[in-house]
Length: 164
Image (cartoon, rainbow, N blue to C red; front, side):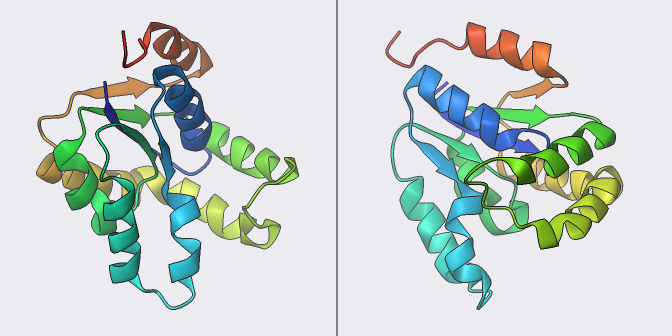
Protein backbone atom coordinates (compact mmCIF):
# COMPACT_ATOMS: atom_id res chain seq x y z
CA UNK A 1 0.00 0.00 0.00
CA UNK A 2 2.05 2.91 -1.36
CA UNK A 3 -0.50 5.13 -3.15
CA UNK A 4 -3.86 5.42 -1.43
CA UNK A 5 -6.92 7.46 -2.40
CA UNK A 6 -9.44 8.11 0.37
CA UNK A 7 -13.03 8.84 -0.69
CA UNK A 8 -16.24 9.56 1.16
CA UNK A 9 -18.94 12.04 1.95
CA UNK A 10 -18.20 15.40 3.54
CA UNK A 11 -17.81 14.80 7.27
CA UNK A 12 -16.98 11.10 6.89
CA UNK A 13 -13.47 11.56 8.29
CA UNK A 14 -11.40 11.46 5.11
CA UNK A 15 -8.82 13.96 6.30
CA UNK A 16 -8.54 12.46 9.77
CA UNK A 17 -7.99 8.98 8.33
CA UNK A 18 -5.60 10.31 5.69
CA UNK A 19 -3.42 11.99 8.32
CA UNK A 20 -3.32 8.91 10.49
CA UNK A 21 -2.65 6.55 7.59
CA UNK A 22 0.05 8.76 6.07
CA UNK A 23 1.81 8.84 9.42
CA UNK A 24 1.41 5.07 9.88
CA UNK A 25 2.87 4.16 6.49
CA UNK A 26 5.26 7.14 6.39
CA UNK A 27 3.86 8.55 3.17
CA UNK A 28 3.26 12.16 2.15
CA UNK A 29 -0.28 13.42 2.75
CA UNK A 30 -2.00 15.18 -0.15
CA UNK A 31 -5.18 16.97 0.93
CA UNK A 32 -7.14 18.21 -2.08
CA UNK A 33 -9.20 20.53 0.13
CA UNK A 34 -5.94 22.36 0.87
CA UNK A 35 -4.81 22.49 -2.78
CA UNK A 36 -8.12 23.78 -4.23
CA UNK A 37 -8.68 27.15 -2.42
CA UNK A 38 -6.16 29.25 -4.41
CA UNK A 39 -7.89 28.16 -7.65
CA UNK A 40 -11.46 28.26 -6.34
CA UNK A 41 -12.04 32.01 -6.69
CA UNK A 42 -11.28 31.91 -10.42
CA UNK A 43 -12.52 28.32 -10.86
CA UNK A 44 -9.17 27.54 -12.52
CA UNK A 45 -9.59 23.78 -12.77
CA UNK A 46 -6.63 23.41 -15.14
CA UNK A 47 -4.21 25.06 -12.69
CA UNK A 48 -5.71 22.92 -9.90
CA UNK A 49 -5.12 19.80 -12.00
CA UNK A 50 -1.51 20.82 -12.60
CA UNK A 51 -1.00 21.24 -8.85
CA UNK A 52 -2.57 17.80 -8.28
CA UNK A 53 -0.27 16.25 -10.91
CA UNK A 54 2.76 17.78 -9.21
CA UNK A 55 1.65 16.64 -5.75
CA UNK A 56 1.16 13.05 -6.95
CA UNK A 57 4.48 12.81 -8.81
CA UNK A 58 6.10 10.75 -6.03
CA UNK A 59 6.15 7.00 -5.50
CA UNK A 60 4.20 7.12 -2.24
CA UNK A 61 1.27 9.21 -1.05
CA UNK A 62 -2.06 9.23 0.72
CA UNK A 63 -4.52 11.36 -1.25
CA UNK A 64 -7.53 12.73 0.59
CA UNK A 65 -10.59 14.01 -1.22
CA UNK A 66 -13.07 13.25 -3.94
CA UNK A 67 -12.85 15.87 -6.74
CA UNK A 68 -13.71 12.94 -8.99
CA UNK A 69 -14.28 14.64 -12.32
CA UNK A 70 -11.24 16.91 -11.96
CA UNK A 71 -8.70 14.45 -10.54
CA UNK A 72 -9.56 10.77 -10.84
CA UNK A 73 -7.80 10.45 -14.21
CA UNK A 74 -4.67 11.74 -12.46
CA UNK A 75 -4.79 9.85 -9.15
CA UNK A 76 -6.56 6.55 -9.71
CA UNK A 77 -4.44 5.00 -12.49
CA UNK A 78 -1.46 4.89 -10.12
CA UNK A 79 -3.38 4.18 -6.89
CA UNK A 80 -2.84 0.76 -5.37
CA UNK A 81 -5.68 1.12 -2.85
CA UNK A 82 -8.94 3.04 -2.57
CA UNK A 83 -10.57 3.53 0.79
CA UNK A 84 -14.27 4.43 0.84
CA UNK A 85 -15.49 5.84 4.14
CA UNK A 86 -19.12 4.68 4.21
CA UNK A 87 -20.46 6.47 7.27
CA UNK A 88 -24.16 7.23 7.63
CA UNK A 89 -25.58 10.60 6.62
CA UNK A 90 -26.41 11.61 10.21
CA UNK A 91 -22.89 10.68 11.32
CA UNK A 92 -21.38 12.79 8.52
CA UNK A 93 -23.66 15.71 9.37
CA UNK A 94 -22.67 15.53 13.04
CA UNK A 95 -18.95 15.34 12.21
CA UNK A 96 -19.20 18.21 9.69
CA UNK A 97 -20.96 20.37 12.26
CA UNK A 98 -18.64 19.63 15.18
CA UNK A 99 -15.45 20.08 13.16
CA UNK A 100 -16.27 23.78 12.86
CA UNK A 101 -15.47 24.02 16.58
CA UNK A 102 -11.97 22.59 16.15
CA UNK A 103 -9.02 24.99 16.45
CA UNK A 104 -7.41 25.79 13.10
CA UNK A 105 -10.33 24.38 11.10
CA UNK A 106 -10.31 25.69 7.53
CA UNK A 107 -14.00 24.99 6.87
CA UNK A 108 -16.18 28.07 7.28
CA UNK A 109 -19.32 28.21 9.48
CA UNK A 110 -21.15 30.16 6.77
CA UNK A 111 -20.87 27.10 4.49
CA UNK A 112 -22.47 24.68 6.97
CA UNK A 113 -25.96 24.67 5.42
CA UNK A 114 -24.48 24.07 1.97
CA UNK A 115 -22.42 21.17 3.38
CA UNK A 116 -25.43 19.68 5.16
CA UNK A 117 -27.45 19.79 1.91
CA UNK A 118 -24.53 18.12 0.12
CA UNK A 119 -24.44 15.38 2.78
CA UNK A 120 -28.20 14.83 2.53
CA UNK A 121 -28.00 14.26 -1.22
CA UNK A 122 -24.61 12.51 -1.32
CA UNK A 123 -25.83 8.90 -1.67
CA UNK A 124 -28.38 9.85 -4.32
CA UNK A 125 -26.25 12.21 -6.45
CA UNK A 126 -22.53 12.23 -5.72
CA UNK A 127 -21.78 8.65 -4.67
CA UNK A 128 -22.96 7.20 -8.03
CA UNK A 129 -20.89 9.78 -9.95
CA UNK A 130 -17.81 9.12 -7.83
CA UNK A 131 -18.22 5.36 -8.10
CA UNK A 132 -18.63 5.50 -11.89
CA UNK A 133 -15.49 7.63 -12.24
CA UNK A 134 -13.60 5.35 -9.80
CA UNK A 135 -14.41 2.29 -11.87
CA UNK A 136 -13.48 4.09 -15.10
CA UNK A 137 -10.10 5.37 -13.92
CA UNK A 138 -9.01 2.87 -11.26
CA UNK A 139 -10.67 -0.50 -11.79
CA UNK A 140 -7.47 -2.29 -10.76
CA UNK A 141 -7.22 -0.68 -7.30
CA UNK A 142 -8.69 -2.78 -4.49
CA UNK A 143 -11.41 -0.97 -2.54
CA UNK A 144 -11.67 -1.12 1.24
CA UNK A 145 -14.98 0.10 2.68
CA UNK A 146 -14.91 1.30 6.28
CA UNK A 147 -18.18 2.11 8.03
CA UNK A 148 -17.31 3.10 11.60
CA UNK A 149 -14.59 4.02 14.08
CA UNK A 150 -13.89 0.37 15.00
CA UNK A 151 -13.32 -0.65 11.37
CA UNK A 152 -11.10 2.39 10.82
CA UNK A 153 -9.04 1.61 13.94
CA UNK A 154 -8.67 -2.05 12.88
CA UNK A 155 -7.60 -0.98 9.39
CA UNK A 156 -4.99 1.43 10.74
CA UNK A 157 -3.62 -1.18 13.15
CA UNK A 158 -3.21 -3.62 10.27
CA UNK A 159 -1.62 -1.06 7.91
CA UNK A 160 2.04 -1.95 7.74
CA UNK A 161 4.63 0.77 7.24
CA UNK A 162 5.87 0.97 3.63
CA UNK A 163 9.38 -0.01 4.70
CA UNK A 164 8.11 -3.25 6.25
